[in-house]
Length: 233
Image (tube, rainbow, N blue to C red; front, side, top):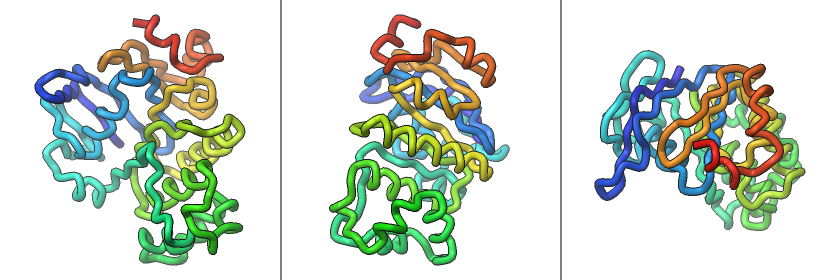
């Protein structure tokens, strides 16, 4: 579905992503692990068109899109969820969702995925917890019916119980057919739902777990958040 071929991204003339190649398959969760500063956000911004790539190819369903504008990539089916959890704080949950949705019937699918939001649909988004705001931001992205969903640092500022709840929902999204690229620092929750995982260090891929079995055998990735992943380089 989504393929990166030798993608390089520069900021201020300095390479922050170097010759990255990876696949994000439909119906699967692909996890991109790395410490803060490894380049995860830059890579997701390059895929979504927020920043240009210096070289390489981004291929969606067989068509190269690296020169396509960001808004056009969104229409083609690439959606990105930022870690900042931007919601319309003065609007209710239902109003936040309706801003992103022309087909109101699709709201039922979101509420099925996140029943917490149905319970709070008349509550102002600014009054939601961090975890609930993350659910709302992901839901808004889903209402655009994306082929590929890019999620950046879903775990940021969340308690473990909420993170595992969100992880289960992301797994359910992939099971419905979407391709998910989840960029994370915390290995254990992310790997619990992953079909494939890559490790990014200093802008380069240093590890690739190509299957669930391979991920399970890669004990170095389990049991910690990624302060130790720099040692894999």
